[in-house]
Amino acid sequence: MNTQSNPELAISVTDATVHYGQVLALDHASLHMGHGTVCGLVGMNGSGKSTLFKTIMGQIKPDTGSVKISGTDPLQARKNGKLAYVPQSEAVDWNFPISVRDVVMTGRYGQMGWTRRAKKKDHAAVNEALERVELTDYADRQIGQLSGGQKKRAFVARCIAQGASIMLLDEPFAGVDKRSEATITKLLREIADDGASVLISTHDLQALPDLADEAVLLMRKVLKHGPPEEVLRAENLALAFGLDPMKRDAS
Amino acid sequence: MNLIELLAEPLSYTFMIRALSVTIIASVLCALLSCWLVLIGWSLMGDAVSHAVLPGVVLAYIVGAPFALGALIFGFLAVALIGGVRDTTRLKEDAAIGIVFTTLFSFGLVLISVTPSHIDLNHIIFGNLLGVSSTDLWQVLILGAVTFSILILKRKDFTLYAFDQTHAHALGMNPRLIGAALLGLLAMTSVVALQAVGVILVVAMLIIPGATAFLLTDKFSKMLIIAPVVAACAGILGVYVSYFLDASTGGMVVLAQGLIFTVIYLFSPRQGLIATRVAARDRRKSLASAHRAA
Image (cartoon, rainbow over all chains, first blue to last red; front, side):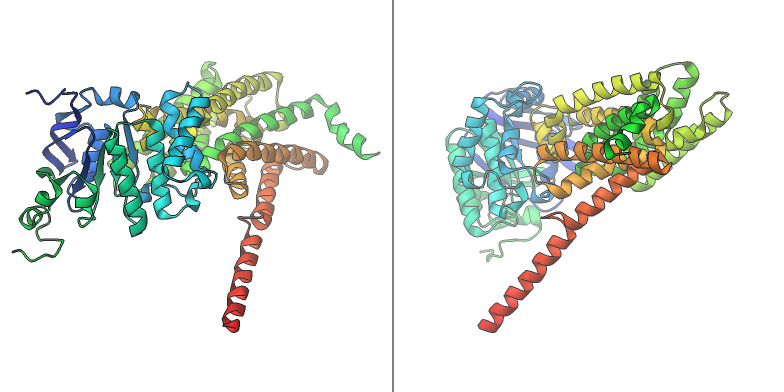
């Protein structure tokens, strides 16, 4: 079977190797992910999670291997608006003079003309996305004036407004309280049930079985890929972390 | 003499009308650009590029090419060299910027000093508002119109670039290209502003208006109005005061911008120093009284 250009696969990374100078960040990593699934990406710091994200996004061109998005070339997939991402909190300038509504509106830019002038359908899509993440009442606030969980939801709304079929979330639960985490988890579940694929890098191993259909254990290469319960077994985690971070009895 | 006559008097001189026109165009253009530079964190880059265009302008003068072309080439050269020194050594970016732009600027100074011409070094360094010729004015008008149009038409892409480059990339845009366009516009704007206040003070016009507007609003679209208005007012004020005091025109324009910034820094209703101090004091007081009541 040729997995490379299989349109059944939302994300298809085959044999990707990435170096930063002399440092090996990804070592022949392969990840194939179907449509309509939520997948949790776990691994310790420096295991290549961010590098894998950047490779999927096309920000890094791997030394070996290839990337296909829904069976097509990544640049074409990006131009078609298929790919959306939710940034890490540290990567965002929260003082930027932009409202929640305007952040969500940037999700529509790919579908607008070259001056990015919003039409009726763009406003409608933004309103609908805000409604979906329950931020309608906060739409005109400056983005930094939201709570941690609301900020994440604002960026999820941007992905919804974009109509992306593949969402990448980089550590979405860092600095988010448990209740907001549950809200976001439910939201991502719904998005996946509508057919989108959601890839989430996370440190929160406990929450993974409730959140994800499948989990990927990364240590420069994909060590395990399967149902969360299986991937999170102590012996597997020991491979990736050198110990069991969930601190269970290794019985 | 009444006030109107007093204010109208400088306008009876052609050179004053030209000076005012160039000042307003340069101020508005720099102010627009400054909104993005301040938010991206490119203030030092503005400083670097505006200085580094000097040899380009002089070489363009020597070979008879448009100043903007020379400025553009040296603007990009400066950015490329800064990136190169930063990425291939252990030096941090501020050191790379400092090395590259001072070297290029000095190269420009040396070129001027050995080039037989009627260009007065002082005019390039400090601006020559009162000696603006009609050719200069035309060049400023054309460059200004082109730069202004691109900035306004593509403003949303520039703002997205400033806020979230990765998202721009995810949408299939090319963030490097957007960044390069912004730097090109910076080089062109430097040529315009060079006429007004000179190489040294261009950087002030590229930072202060945007910074002032940022203290006043949480909406980027409003910054794009506040910054040019503030800069234009400072420009007019500066030119007039310098006329009556017989003081340095470029210096006066920038001084006026700095004064406006100071006033807003102190008195801005939300971000201002006084407002935030008063709010903090009130909060302490109400907490203390709540504590007593408990």
